[in-house]
Amino acid sequence: MSMTRRLLTVVLVSVLGCLAVGAQAPPKQAGGEAKVTWYFYTVKWGFQDEYLDLFQRNHYPILKTKEKAGRYASVRTYVPEFHGDGRADWTFAVELVVPAKEPATPTDEEIIAKLYPDRAKFAKEEQRRFEILTAHWDVPLNRLDLDARKPTR
Image 1 (spheres, helix red, strand yellow):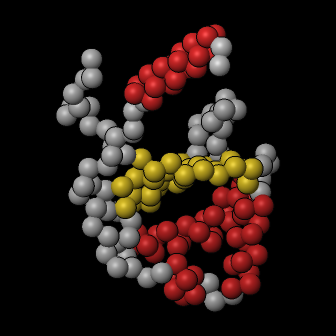
Image 2 (cartoon, one colour):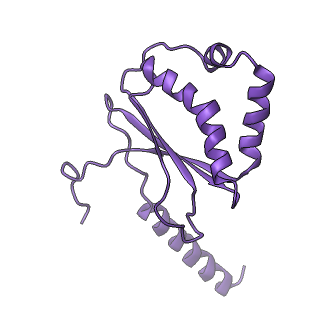
């Protein structure tokens, strides 16, 4: 190996090593705290009302049943006041808060069977709800307590 190649290899390994040392893991959720997750949906333009109708008719009752059973401490839904910037554009969001101690609750299948006796209609509408989405992502959050955090520098 030539001297130039060895030097480049040493420099590359050093730079990568420094980057790895500087990288930080996200804070972990403290034990005994509720867990918050935000679910974002981007709906095809012009289908927002249809999406909300389908969500409200088919999925929201499932979430509310779980909230009533104690699986979720809260279920909240949001729409943005303005259009996004294209990088983080979303049309609808759901916030689910799971309590620190989760009780035993009915399964999704049990809830769906009870709420939707016409399973074919339910399945068709749920398929349609996802057909009119262009994106969906989940963001599980870890609370960062800045009052307790010690600065690194």
